[in-house]
Amino acid sequence: MKIKKLEQKAIELLSHLIETPSFSGEEENTGKLIQDYLKAFGVEYSTSNNNVWAKNKYFDENKPTILLNSHHDTVKPNSNYTNDPFKPEVIDGKLFGLGSNDAGGSLVSLLSLFVYNYLRKDMKYNLVLAATGEEESSGTKGLNSLLTDLPQPDFAVVGEPTGMQMAIAEKGLLVLDGYASGIAGHAAHNNTVNPIYKAIEDIQWFKTYEFPKVSELLGKIKMTVTQIDAGTQHNVVPATCHFVVDIRVNDLYKNREIFEIVDQHTQSKVVARSFNLNSSSIDISHPFVQAGLKCGRNTYASPTLSDQSVLSCPSLKMGPGDSTRSHQANEFIYLQEVSEGINIMIKIFNEIL
Image (cartoon, rainbow, N blue to C red; front, side):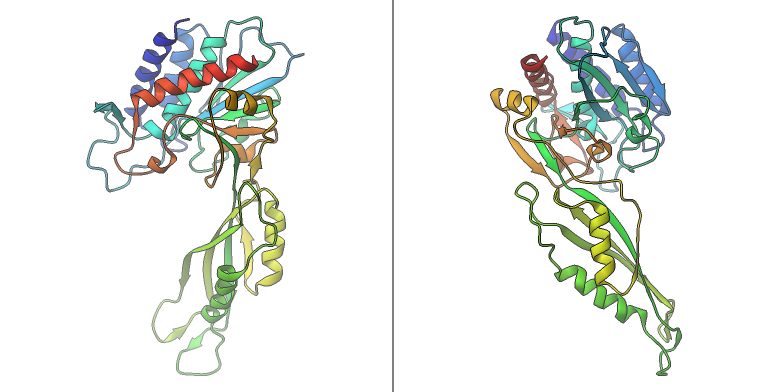
């Protein structure tokens, strides 16, 4: 199969994905576009919720399996857009549109890689493609819901905009709700306990505490209080004060460990929204990483979260585009980035397949 044809079909699909709204949990129509793309290449596929997945034609259970995953859901466009987020438009080599960079370019690159190798009989590995939803919302019907249906992967490439460099580690995420309790009453009296003051003490701890284990790849754990809410009027001491903490976790801690340390050091009641979004990393000696280095790619550690967090196998994050463009107004990806993404993916996989 000619790579130029793959590049052309990838841009066509990416344009259709852009013009088809696919907010998290509402990806049915983009799922159909991906099904049509696979069908056009003669690929047999399966669906679950709004997820689409497929195995290479000559899948062999005796061979190790590589999972190729990216998502086709998007965030909602922010209010600063000056162009139509659902209008795919090419200007100066840039393809504009919501989801073009995060993670449409990565998705069509992995799709191209998959169909390029779909009919090969001589591969050392199986390939499994999973185009999934609900990544942006960390929902329950995305990749995590598909893992029991998929063949068990030995390794995974998760498609996200990394400039086609290899993110060999990424921080996990733990979101905590803090609830400081007090005794409500009139602000003029002394028979109250102000939960706002108690929350402030805990917030100060979150601001200053440093976890002792510092990762060579991911650095320190970062804790940030991002929301606070208490009170209804000026002369009433409230009964409770609620605050939210965003914690970015390095690869030396599990999320439950972090929670236990926080719980020991704070007086507020803390509740974790989920323990599932753990950090991830892969050894630099892994054959894929070594193949990437041979092909001129670099390694780095990523501060952002992806569907890697739900995988138990070694994995890395890689794809065309720039992570800093994600979720910004007037999102775009260079057409050349998509072309390079497809070619580099095929080149690296040729080294290991």
